[in-house]
Length: 397
Image 1: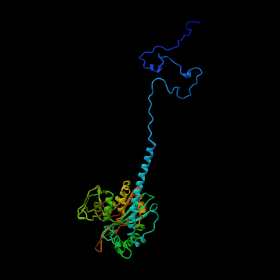
Image 2: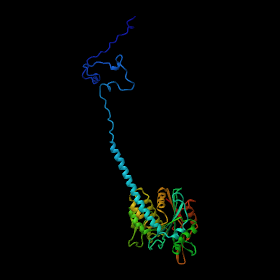
Image 3: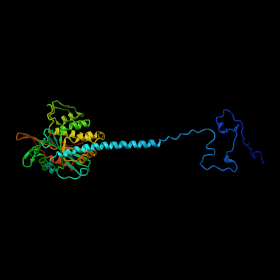
Image 4: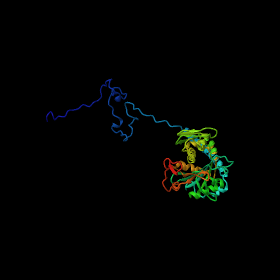
């Protein structure tokens, strides 16, 4: 065979001198003097091979130490147990505080139920569940000049319809000067029905004119709202235009700027009650709309989650200015429906201002029927004509 076919013999490396500047030399230094290649135990004849995937014999790889992340420390078991107990105690205290607030509220509502006379309760139409069925509640606003709710004047008349299935609240303002037939008394201002026969006659008059059943009733003494609004920390209202009183109310001149305003109890009472202003567009209808804004702001504030911490003081004040047939549970249902409602339809009846028998009255408009239909959720809400002061219409919010 030729020289090119002869295979070259290779020498087996059997160790040698290691230079001091070799950074990898420590990997092959096992404490046995000069760096030599040593067979691991598993490579020796007859030695057992390590299991696949397991650590090498000796507890790790030789050579450089590998940095490892220490396992996170665990909280002591007693510390965790104490934390859970502390959270449980706080929840129990919170629930107990809510219970005290509810009891204060329920006790005041019971007194508000006793302020309502039996004849008024008998005039109401039976209804189903406030949580499930549509309900119509008559809200009568009063200046609270009478000695009790039965003798107080009904300065504002508002119908509130709740419909849990549609997540909508409907409001219908009835001008107190609207001229309608009063059973047994002929055509008069609708407010006169309260003077002639109290709330039972007013309920019957509303039912005959509108065709709406009145399921519940609530008298609201606006003067009593001062303490409630103070307990809630005031109200925030979006005022659509500037209002300046032309006569003093409560011994003071009042000016309310356009835009978002914050009202305390006294200011909110003046905002809802002032009758004479420098704005020629103000009327009994716009005054009722101001009262609606106050009522809605109160309802919005009552259902805010932060009110739960003031529930006891609010609960004691919320029913004091009321006389109602609604129970505490039904009033809470109203608050829940308000919280869940996705929109509010605010409507008002209207007519043509005239003088009849020396009195300024509103002769009902034919469009009132369309507004009542919208209040029932049967048709789209008709808008009030632009520039009109007394025509009926609706606003969606």
